[in-house]
Length: 397
Image (cartoon, rainbow, N blue to C red):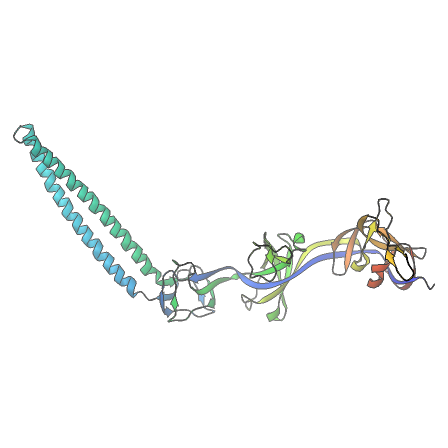
């Protein structure tokens, strides 16, 4: 009995298994916009506060419009001058047309020379070109006025959607940079809080089990771990290096752990839910009833040769006091469990399925009611095939 290995065992049985992937993230509205300034200037009026509800088209802020109003007046004056010049050009054209018609009649009657007729014809063409040129100047002045008026209109900042002001980033009197720059100033964020989501980051080893439409349960720390039902609606296709600011992987991050962004749309979000709150999601990736299952720690990996025999490490001694490991025969690593037979632990290769909280499904290689070794963990790591065992504790199914 001294050479027996002390183990714990359990009788296999069928049970219901649910596979869950857990990850954390934060709550965000489904639709939100960072409302930026379209023109540069100083904020002269801020008409909303954080938490206020706004409607589409509602004025939420105003930017100093003094220089845009002056530019508008200047453009209007330039347009009026261009239109006046066009009227004069048209009048000159009409006079030239009448003079040409007289010269044409007189030329037919041989009362004027060819030179005089050609001169009248050239004068008419010049006046027509002058009118065309002036029409283009008027069109240019109209376009310039329209552009300046557009800038003037943009000094009035309006909400692009119905929603709630979730973040107010600027105060009245601050200077903002317009959208013509590469980094326009964000004045506020407006979100539609009627549809809320949880954006979570799932480890790359778990993402393959997650699919669109799977059910999830989201708990929010700030709301006393309130649990909200949800559904997976988006799965990121690009990996995000862990610890980054959320951008996808573009550089060399081969040895860095990565996550994938997953979006869970929440069902009936409570009124107290706010953007940015920390959340933990449990996504149900699989559920099976009455499957053969064993404790997760009972499944171990062993090297098996072509005949299916377990390859054990053998040790040889070349000199007194020296122990060296003999070369290990090449084989294939296989999952398996140790089945108790005749007082020995026999390694039995198995195929596994879904993983529950503490148990794992066995799809092939093990019969219901078999007695298997389930512990201890340290013992399972070093337990050899056909080792003689002593059952310290047996758990019945």
